[in-house]
Length: 96
Image 1 (cartoon, rainbow, N blue to C red):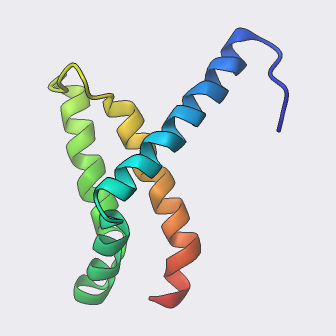
Image 2: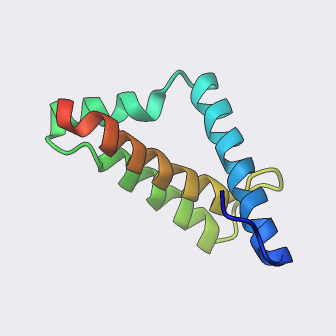
């Protein structure tokens, strides 16, 4: 792992570690639902990326309208969906 050289880089590492923990926790809690939605969208609609588009549209709308509740970090959720999409693309798309 790269060694941080300043406070900003330490915060980047902490943010990413927190994001990884959030993704794993939510994925377990929701039963790998994003991955399942991608598979369903590929089969029924011909495009596995539709769930990402829908989730990001909703997150961006809430972010722009400042409708996020106090406990939700909309930016972190959005980043999480992009990470899930990248990983699902790597692991699943060849099988779809």
